[in-house]
Image (cartoon, rainbow, N blue to C red; front, side):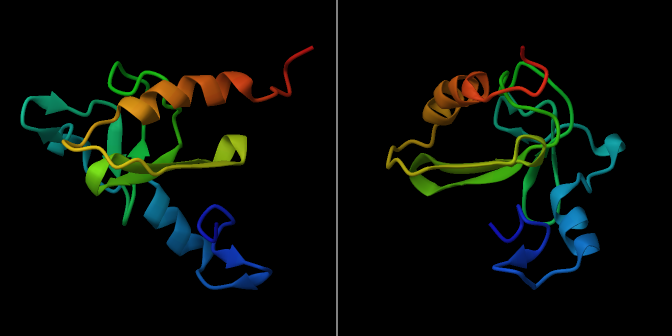
Length: 120
């Protein structure tokens, strides 16, 4: 929650806003191309200092939104933060081999369920 709150937790600042910005924006040069894991190309995903960062829409994680950031851990645990939507999501499943299935199944449902300020 501290990162989602711009470096503050329970009213106390722990990180400078500039530090949080560096952590949550892409730091990988365009010339480096997209990160790959085996045959998997993570198009649209860059990396900040500690997080993966969505930099453009793509077929890899099709419901991801530009600006969201997060990370995954062993056994398919994931979290992502969408500053635009004031949203933090954490999934804690224990599935090997590692998969994005639960995150990707939930992501579209969660975003579709949010009330849009543009909705009538």
